[in-house]
Each structure stands twice: as C-alpha cells, then as structure tokens.
Image (cartoon, rainbow, N blue to C red; front, side, top):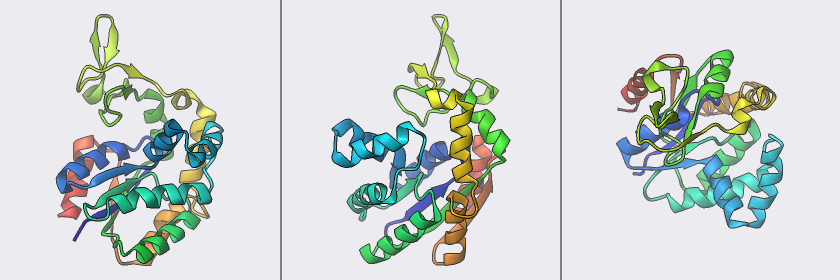
Length: 226
C-alpha cells in the first residue's frame, strides 16, 4: 500500500528539507503546495491567476481555488504515494482534505509536525537563501553548518554551487508575521489543522523538535517512521 504523509511546520522550520529526505526514503512524490500554485500561475490557468492575487498580498488562497488544485495533484500520485507539504493551512482545509481523501480511497499514513518557537522560525526565514537549482538545498547565512560558500566574490549554494537569492517576503517582517499568524493560530489556522489530525485518529502522529540540527530532526522523524 502506498505511504501518504502530511508534513506540518512553520515557515523556517526546515519542513521542505525534511520532506525531500523522507521522499527519498519512501520513493513518494513530494508535493509542495507552493509548487502547485507556481505551476498553475506559470501555466496561466484560471485557478492560477486567481491564486496569484491572494499570494501577492500574503493572504491565504481560498479553499475553492486551493483544494481542487491539491486534489488533482494527489490523484496523480495515488499509486506511488505522496508527502504533502504546506497544505492544509486551516482547520476548514483539514476537514475538507480528510473528507476528500476518504472519498478518493486514499489512506493517510502519517502526520509529521516539526515544532519550532516562533521567534526562532522568524530568524531562520530572514537568513535563508534559495538555490536556483533546488529550493531544498539548505543555505543559511546565520548557521555555520549550512552557510553558503563564496565563489568569485559572491555566495553560492553550498550543495551544488548554484546561484542564490532571497525571497522578497523573507526580508519583510510584516509578511513573515502575517504568515506566522496563520500558522500559529490554534483557533482556525494551521495549528488548528494539526490538532484536527491529532484528534481524528487513523494516521500516526509524529511531533519532533525543530530547534535542533537538520540531522537530529531527520533522525527523530525516521525513528518514528520506521
């Protein structure tokens, strides 16, 4: 049976990096909600153009736009299995996803939560750099273990030497706070979605400390997955 995993963690928790590692272990598709949006936006689809209006303002994309995009992508990976990263972001989305997975005959195997203090998450976001070749190559100007390397007078990806950039919203404290307000909201936000799956049962819930090193987070996750 295919392994299906939900991954939760605030922006800055290293969720994308850990998702890539888990993907390699199980051979599942790593489905990142932002990538789904970018694919639709780049393709100029109607849903993509609607989503862009909300993303540009730092707002949540409405469920009637997001859910059809996500389910369409998950359905393509039904036989192989998937790790879904960045969705659901609200309790309402969690409920809708749970219902839709049941209707589609897709069983949720694990829910992985990376727990991280809000201030630490914010500091990590502002120092991270994105590799042009692979966004999951960890580069961060504040962490010695994953600092970019210097080449010809400029910093490049420590993994592949690719060109680095900083997302504009990663340097915007208001935008970061807005995203974290959504994530850490236990009433209707992403933490409410996490708690929904904790109470729903069925899938194994895995919560790990995200403040330690990348390798330590990986070890903690793998220990629970095995």
